Amino acid sequence: MLPYIYSVSHDVSKNGSSFMRALSMDFPSDKRTWDLNNEYLFGKSFLVAPVLNAQYTPEKTVKTDENEGWNKTDGNKENSVSNIDFTQNKGVKVYLPEGADWFDFWTNEKYSGGKEIQKSVNLQSIPLYVKAGSIIPLGPDVQYATEKKWDHLTIKVYPGSDTDFILYEDEFDNYNYEKGAYTEIPFHWNEKSKTLTIGDRKGKYKGMIETRSFNLILPDGRQKKVDYSGQKTDIHFR
Image (tube, rainbow, N blue to C red; front, side):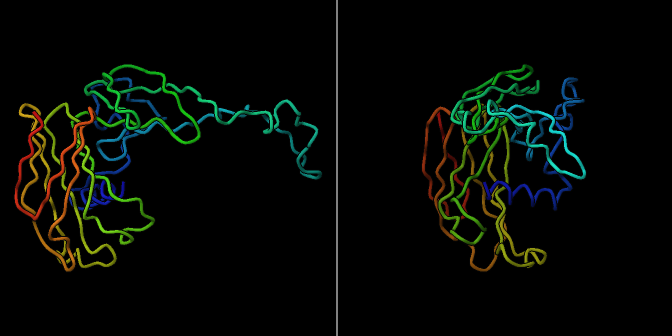
């Protein structure tokens, strides 16, 4: 997710936006979001619902003594970790704000907003949803920005409304961006014509990727690959 994180970070710095957003910031007319404190938006596209309560082990109070420390007799064999099946799926409730449709990031299943749903989770996943009308760039699996080139990015388009996204890139490891050494590649999704437009690249920096490919994916599985050299191109999905 580094291309998405890097681009949103640029938007935060340049336009005074914010990264972690209370749901009421983007859905003020939905009163249920006003005091919802266990979900948040990650950028303007992702809805994150962290699992905040223990799913596999019971929550219990363990008494301690300041002189003797933890009283081990408070434990019991019934609650030991060895008796717990950590492969079981558990269920948590997630509220999806009214005013947009939502796609499950893991399954691409689509939901209408304004309702609470039950989501199956395990130790490998948490509830994560993408707002309909979003463009999400995804890159290679890396530990740091310059580990692998960004010359073959995946662009996930979640239809539902017209939307824009700017893919931001720079040299990654210095402050030359403050001197204008960076690029912006604009993406626009036209909902009516089902067309993704990749606009002309703006800016330049030393070592930038001149020619690259984008793998475009829709939630229904349709994919298209496009080669991009910095000039505007339209990709139709009708």
